[in-house]
Image (cartoon, rainbow, N blue to C red; front, side, top):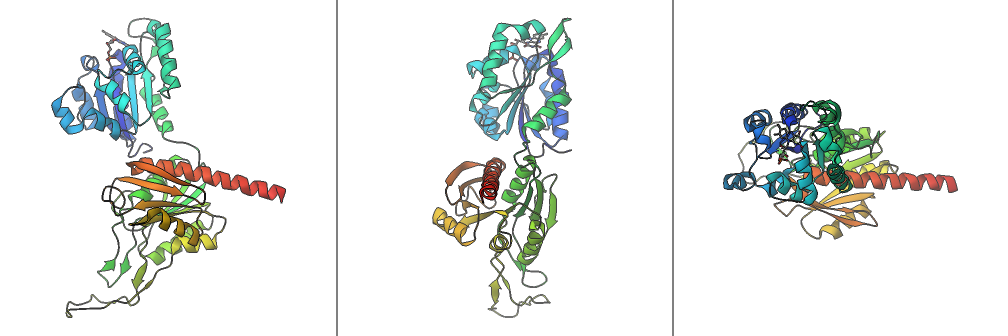
Length: 410
Ligand SMILES: Cc1cc2nc3c(=O)[nH]c(=O)nc-3n(C[C@H](O)[C@H](O)[C@H](O)COP(=O)(O)O)c2cc1C
C-alpha cells in the first residue's frame, strides 16, 4: 500500500541507542512511497553512520548546522519549507528539551523552529529518564503546542532496566505517520474530479490543446483520497502518475470528458472541475494529415460544451466546484463565473504569474463562494489542495445540514 506517496518527510535521528531502529524506519517509509531526508544530530552519528541512512533514503544526510556546502545545496530553511512532516525518531530527552526551549543550535532544532508542517516525535530513553518530572513537563509542553507524541513501549531496555521508554516499533511508527496524513472529513463521499487539458483533433496527427499539467487536479484527487472520499478522476492527457486509490478514467477531447463526467456524477455527491477544457473544437476534422501546400489555411471552430455549467444544471443536488484561470480581474471574473455557471464555489488562480498556476509546482488561489473570498497563500500544490479539500468538506457538510433542517421545518 503506497499510502505515503509524494509525502516529504524529514526524519530527525538523535543520539539514543534506538537510532539503529531508524534504519528500518527509513526503509519502511520509503517502501510506502515517502521521500525521506534524514537529519542527524552530531550525537546520533556516534551511534549509526550517516552512510546507512544515505543508502536507504537515497538522499544526502544532513547533520551540521553551519556547513556552507550544505547551505548551498539545501539549507535548514529550505529543508523546513520542503517538508510535509518532521518525524523525530528516536527523540532523546536532550532533543525533546531542545525543542521545548526553541533552541536553534543544532540543525534539527533550527528546522523545527522554521517548520510550517506538523511534527511527530517517538521518544526513546531509559525508564527513569522517561519518568523524570523534567521529561514529563517537556512532553506536556510539546503536546500542548501540537507536537504528536508516539508513546514509547514497555520492556527490557539496553541498559538492563525494565520499564517504559523503548522506542515504539518502526511498523507502529509508520502506521501513526500514515494516519497523520489521513482524515475522515470526506469519509465515504463520492467525489468526481476532472483534471488536465483536453485535446481537440485537427487531423490524425495534430490537435488544439493548452499548457495544463494536471498537477492541481491530481493533487486535489490525492487530498480527497486522504480525506476518505471515493474519488473518480477523469483526466485529459498528462505526464504525471495518478494518485493511489482513485478510479482513473482517461479521456482526450472535451466531449469525451463531458460524457465521462456526466456518467460519473450520476451517483456522485461532489464535482470538482479542475480540467482546462478547450473552449473550441474543429468543425471539420480532416481524416487525412493536412498537407503543407498553402501559405495560409483557415480552420473553423465551434464552442465545446461547458462541462461544469452543464453538469451543475443537470444535477442541482451535486456540490459543484469550478476553477477560474484568469489573467486579469481575477476576483471579479471568478465571481461572475460562480454566478453564471450556478456553482457552489469557485477556485480562482492567476495564470499570468509564471511562479504559480499551470505547470508550476506551487499555487496561490482564492476560494470564492457567494459569501466568502478566502486567499490560500502560495504553497506547494499538494498543501494548497489539502486546504481546498478541507473547505469543500466543511461547505458540503454545511449545505447538507441546511437541507436537512429545511426538510424538517418544511
Ligand atoms: C550509550 C548511550 C546511549 C544513550 N541512549 C540514550 C537514549 O536512549 N535516550 C536518551 O534520551 N539519551 C541517550 N543517551 C544520551 C544522549 O546521547 C545525550 O543526551 C546526547 O547529548 C543526545 O544528543 P542529541 O539529543 O543532540 O542527539 C545515551 C548516551 C549513551 C552514551
